[in-house]
Length: 338
Picture 1 (cartoon, rainbow, N blue to C red):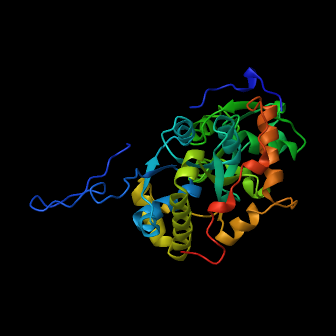
Picture 2 (cartoon, helix red, strand yellow; picture 1 turned 90 degrees about the vertical axis):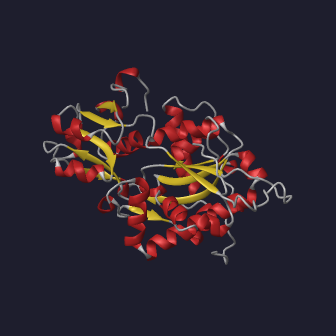
Picture 3 (tube, rainbow, N blue to C red; picture 1 turned 120 degrees about the vertical axis):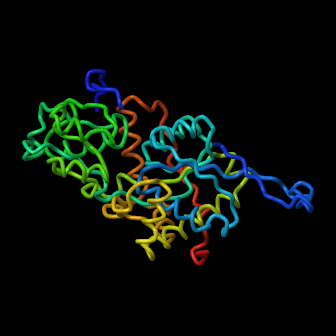
């Protein structure tokens, strides 16, 4: 894939301390007075993406506390801002897709992927204006996507499968959340986005012409922690992962309540929350996917595809050692679910 300034046409658009309330007459001894180690919360990013929503359930239902870890979820409405928070040391852990994980590892080589959250299976969509009847009609047209990221990869996959190349279109660099007005006024003819924005684009007259359902496994979400956290707080990381699976299972068993919890936490309409187009993985599935193998749906080929994309796009100078990216040692044992 050729990198050029011309095809990057448009620029894309607390820590809070905890206090224990005690009686003025008989104050409770502090943890240090009792000889206990004082720990800061495990700081973890989250944002407006379906694959991260179980975190809100884990917090609301007290699953982190039940599993024995103090977690502070740091919400960032700018998903890409979450990456900066991690590289700046503001958070201990980050959930994101593989192309971001590879870029982060280039700056934080001792970080590791410890959890495979799930994968988009139709949740990422290319929406097009009504006059685009088939994908080949996009030749010479403007297509919006976050360049150097998942959106550009999905556009590239769509074009390649239909006899086109990325240079056959004008790639407009735009956030997935901002493309609807551009589709409406004809500034662009197609765009990568996700729910609820895909539904909003459809209501405005656009239609889906391609989705991540056609690229199984390519766009998945992972959890990465800093190396220092993994070394110094392994039990906290294990507890975090147990709470994650507990939250996923709770949402699957109580979808309406789960949606309501997420809606309150993120201040979004409960009706806009749906797991359609997304597949969360069970512990057994994660353990299987972390196991080495040559299955085309295993992790190594998928990681290699992201690495190749970033190298060709000029974003990655050093290829990471795939065997050092993943660490499955923090997963619960196969027979342990609590």
